[in-house]
Length: 617
Image (tube, rainbow, N blue to C red; front, side, top):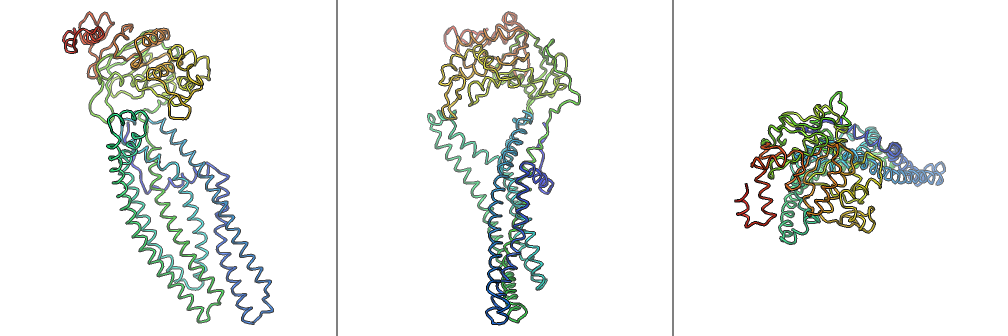
């Protein structure tokens, strides 16, 4: 697995990609937003000019000079136009809010879809790397809202920018220093915003794992699978205290950042206020000296006040865009994770039917986050129609070997072949069509029972007849038909009207998924660990009926279930120490015979545990 990419905060190309993404997610709403942006940019200037005309007209009329030329009807017309501008602005703002909300929904759905697509696409090996979870956590936090927020900030920048250019040109007609002073006075606010954004981004990256710890503790306190032990062992208080401690530390650090930001912003605002009121004094002085009319003064007063708020909004928007850019890098970091299992340039066709089967030659493997080898020098083969059993103590590498056979990982040494062809030479998706797998930690889907079985072969059309047949083969049809809505019943208690199954029944549902598939390679890890002896016998009887012409690998600690295997491989500390049939291995009197003897003695109940271990061959 390749190392996680380090995001570059100064790469603003992602901003352009985000804008394109927003546009493509909802082009109609985006076009409406762009039009409304232009309308809202022009209206403030029109409003200021109409206000000047109204004040000047009233001043002329009340001064008794030219009152005949300036009638009240004209003043009413100007006021009506000003009112129309205001109403137009309110309508444009309302429509803009609607357009923004619509875009937010479209963008959120699109980003979550892309995030989910990447999550199911990345190599399984990433799940062995804690850094992956940090990256996923940050991406999940930012992906749903950050592109829309970027669009909102960009709209604010463009709208404020267009309006403020017009206002600054207007102020420059009075004196160019007036416009320049207002711009310079608000630069500290932009600097403060950018500095805070960088600090917040760095803190978020450093604390991703800590925030995940808090989320995990919160999940434990409400998770149904841990609810029994939380109550029996009295873990509630301990978990709550740990949660509060972590959240308290995160809260204090966030507040420290907020305090620093507030102090910087307060200083910047004070500086801007001094410049603004100085500008107002200059306009008043010009009016007092007769250089400006009363209407001019009102217009310039409004321009100065508007320029302050608009420039502040502009600089805040620019700072927010910078922040958005930084945080979008976290989404990019996840979306740009590279695969260590790239498809071959010219994939070989996956054999159908399988003729020679699976084979391992000198296979060695260690997990990406570890230096300790899990498997070494593994040589085995399983042919169509054969059942190969993997046995051995916990930690011997059995489950890891199953994952390698299913090509969830690639070995670091040796090769795994199907009909003599390296698995890496096949298209991964096509290869997995030939595998039916039941893992030890099988999935429990809180969805209808029919879906829980159908998920074993979603590539083929949905068929209730096939689903019922698979359920009967796994021995779970009776349990499902006893539910309120039978196969339509939602399994589990996560959703309303859901019904829970026993652990053994859940395991049978997982087996039914494998029975549904017509794949020619069957990998089963602890298929009957939660079943009673009768159910175990029934399942293996059904399993044997499905093994015809299939290459099957079974992992089990119950050695009674592997006696039917064509060949048994015994693993210890990542190596194969014995292989052969049950009778051959028992006759050899080695590791397998000792394991079998211990289990047999325990079932017979011959004496104490120490005695059983002592009498083991």
